[in-house]
Image (cartoon, rainbow over all chains, first blue to last red; front, side, top):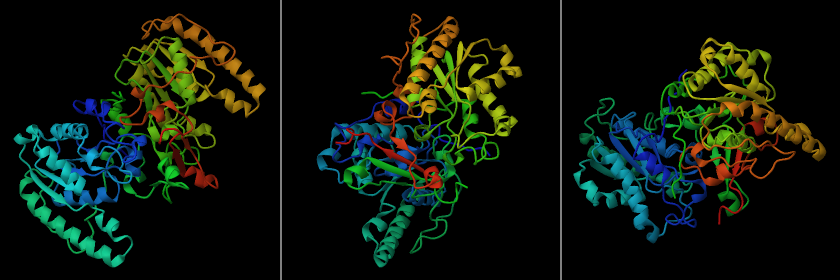
Length: 271
Length: 271
């Protein structure tokens, strides 16, 4: 059985972007897990993307597969793309190259070197390309977009834009409270339905023509969409893109946790 | 500071080789850790390789970085290449795509589907290419070479060949006995010096002209050579290619160990 994969960074400007990236002088080690290296993108870099999704920062699963938004947030974002009829013509980048540790200081967020590098990705993906719509997941993504939007290179670019609630905001805001989770989920889905109305008219070249269907009050079948192996590097096992929770940060204290990622093959894979 | 990386599998026949690889029906799960996926190569796939090194199978570090021979065995092999003047014009493949679990049965080793796929890699790297010398590390590699060597496609290929002792055979054979380790190391280095004499005359296009210098009785400064970040995927932190021992299989029993890889950032990296 063939296993399509993402060949990655094979042409300019991506070869240069992935060889020369900001390091600890731009992403301070007290605010980012720079020790695990930068993680750049997921999806199409060959100019075929019709929708750009902006996320926030990579976590532990992303660190292992070296692609962003590969877990639950990624599957929910895939569902949003699917409602726009976009099944493979998409690309994801994050506001931050490294995993956030604690919180990001304003001075870091506004660092021109952080912004300039990120803007080079926006330029590469949007200027003289065929992207028709952009979705920002959460506040950091929205800020990244707004900063780029006023840059000179952005002025020639005409795309629809929606900033939406981060896909896992209901979980992070409700902290285990089921009623809060249900309310936050409902609110998120309303927010996403509104975004669909904003974006849908501009997505003129979906992979599959798809009638606009808003979300309900809770996640329904089909709202979460599996991430294709085509988005992952060559040779990664199927469980790494089909499942979640196989990478965690373990350790007796904060430093030990920061230094650790523990990978566990899900049950039922090893005979 | 720029961080050159290996763009990986960007052109045919490698795109097809890395999308369509043998799975559990060819590499049985009782003999291979197929759950972690195949790991294909390290080094140049663009036709610039002058030396091909054949290894045995990938271990846990290789599983994480998705490139082969990235640990101590790899550094010793780099040292051998350096003695031939080959600093970047090399390519490594393994006899087996997956990490060996226990031992490999003769029936598996002789499976025509395993052999045919591996021979396609040999064909891709050797037929109408400019490789001048081939080194096999250990018995499985030597067997892989000998099987390919009698295939029809191989008949047009003229290269020097040496089968050498596996780079970490002294450690694995001496099991902590220092005297045995020293004796086995001396024997290995003699074996490798002999191989250098076999191979050197055929390496006509080294990266740097290098006078032939045999090994001493023990590892000397310069016999182990760092693996360049250029051999690793984009964005991997420097400690993943400079250091060893950061990935281990941990668990209370064999199954738990098999399902686990624990990554630990080396001391001194996280502030």
